[in-house]
Length: 165
Image (cartoon, rainbow, N blue to C red):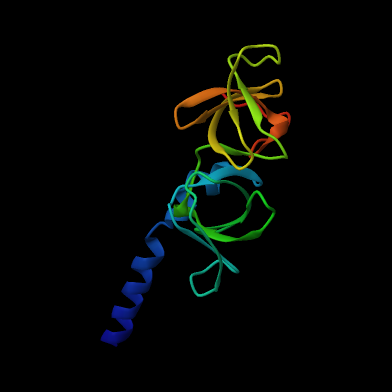
């Protein structure tokens, strides 16, 4: 009888512990899909939502933008800029918005969000930067302290009509 009572008390105690994934803002306030970024310097993408599933990719690029397409407990199904999909633990991701330069040529980082404004920098395809102040087809992009406004069409990690403060 004591064993049953002890087992029951453990079961009740664990049932009352809140699930940290349920309290996470991503799980409760965001609807999928949404953009985020990889926060870890090494992050494994898995074939399923548990550590028991095999790793399909090892990402070694912190701040790489990803798109969260599904949520399962503390796991997120993500798509990377090349379209590869798999599962990653939520604690390896960040809400920090980043984008990667896509296309054949470099994009211009301008002083103001206007085509004719002064050219400050150029970013080659594959360059990743943090984005903010998106609207009217432009985003402010910061690449390790070198910032300027970029047209959204040359980026992956932000939607065409998206507005960011």
